[in-house]
Length: 163
Image (cartoon, rainbow, N blue to C red; front, side, top):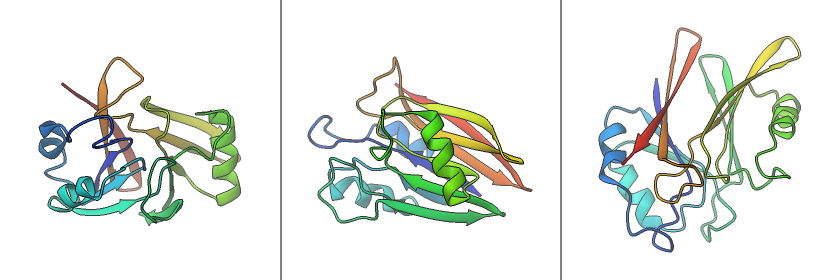
């Protein structure tokens, strides 16, 4: 399974539209996850033309999406949040404890606008923390999205820079 991950698009407040490259990179995905701060239904309508979409509500969203979602893919429990629930912002230790509390193997979040692929040791397992950054308003030198490939009980996360 291939999953496209995107977050913090902030359209139209901070950007006019999604970069064309997002659609090119997501052309082969089975699912798109938007980690919140969508801020416009038009973004989701465009992404739905590519694939099924799963979305969580961000702190800037007016839409009534869930604050948290959970997927089970090939025996991996994957939690999805925006990330504004974590204080201080982006605290990996608090994200690790949230994963332990929820029994998640992977946590996908946004909010920081800074991409992250980080594996942490935990009780008898490893926890994978993922953040795709932002394709429109990064707080990092590059605009980014992410692709996640899950097969044969293995997860491979790829950060993709957008021009």
